[in-house]
Image 1 (cartoon, rainbow, N blue to C red):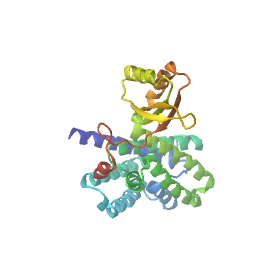
Image 2: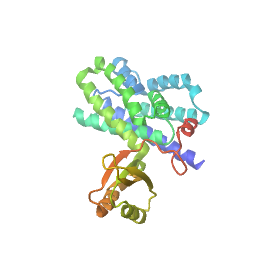
Image 3: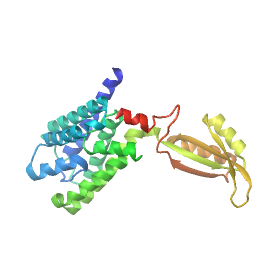
Image 4: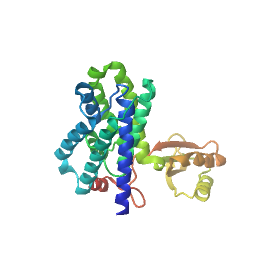
Length: 285
């Protein structure tokens, strides 16, 4: 019950932030958005329809059409998210005003607020409906991050909005959409984002000892062989949080300044002690 209340509060706060981004930065500066909210904004420009009502109608139809793909808990969270976003859109649309006449600045804040709000909703296990449902499916079946899924779908909608808001405003909108996607990934993954590091060193034993003692992280030792020299070498493999990478590099180069180190982002971790795999995530959708 405590977790459910916390999730609902996250969704409410995220919905409010999302709505402020739309009604205080997007619409007053004649920008657009991607996905269903993009269509909602375009309908507002063309027919002066309420963004809250249109957003609720379009998203509810999509959710009902795809209800068979989700479990009961996910449907409840999604419907709650849709109602929250639509309510705050409706409540803030009358008070929304232009806070800046600088279109670039408006696009930046619109992207950060809309993406940050959606990210909070995603982190709580909900969606704002519409294309975010498609983004969750892309995350499940294609391995895309939530931000990437939203970005691809949003770009398609933004390109279609050129006929209404013009090419210049659409280009600014792309900036907002891109920043929004990055904000979503940051809110969902946050400081828990992982990076994998491969270390090849002539002093691998000392590097291993330093990492184990000073970083207190588990590390895997792989057997490797040089393709040119044929020499056998130990290859160290470790996964750390992004904020730990600087400290890890310092530990490595204190021992061997000529060590070969590669770093790459980890899309997903499956196994005991890590986040749920795709099969379990699918059940939570």
